[in-house]
Length: 316
Image 1 (cartoon, rainbow, N blue to C red):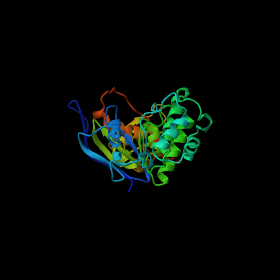
Image 2 (spheres, rainbow, N blue to C red):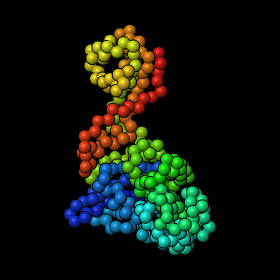
Image 3 (cartoon, helix red, strand yellow):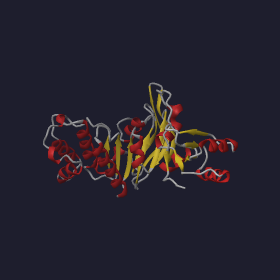
Image 4 (tube, helix red, strand yellow):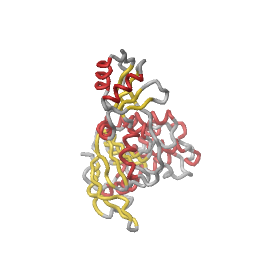
């Protein structure tokens, strides 16, 4: 079993508890997104998992063992925490060759992973000449060098262009489909929504959620519908009589209702109101995340979110 098991984990710095009695498991065969506001404890948790910092209490087991107990850790766990980790005076090829030698990894893997991350053509260039996106790719190559069963990545899409983000998304999905344990910290909500199967969410060092992506969005959003009609005033009167809340979209063409589409459709049919378009709306991951973490964000400002996502329209 190659799960990551976080067991009653706490970490204090000068009396401040950065991680507060965390307990969760990251399972193989799926991408687990690791979310939380700045200062929530995500990076600290990853450092504790990799033995880069000692916990005040609790522990993290990877494949049933502490990371520090592995003689050749890159064969078991691949990690990207800092894209600047490679020495700028070395070439990408030399950097990976050194890591391979230290972990008794066949040298052929160096060329394989450089090709896998798209750096084969620049493998002999000094790392200091690399862009941030290229350094990210090199960090991913280092993480994959030992063909590990467990992969931990902190903000892996940072610095990547759109093509690179799509490449990263497919890479992580492929790793999960191959049965590996993939744990990814990110601030990019849209990207997390497109690749994660499961979410672990922190706030001020505490565990706020440990659930599937779909269940998370459903839990922190309200049912609603979007409807378009040629007789908006009559629809609004009918909605008000039935006690339903509603707002008008920014373009004034649609009505957003705090009730499921089935209820709105039945109400319109009963009142003889023609419906041109009707569909349920769902909160985005970003909206659900903000609803959950609003009280646990260190730096906040008031922002109104009015964007809705609609299911394929039902046309009358």
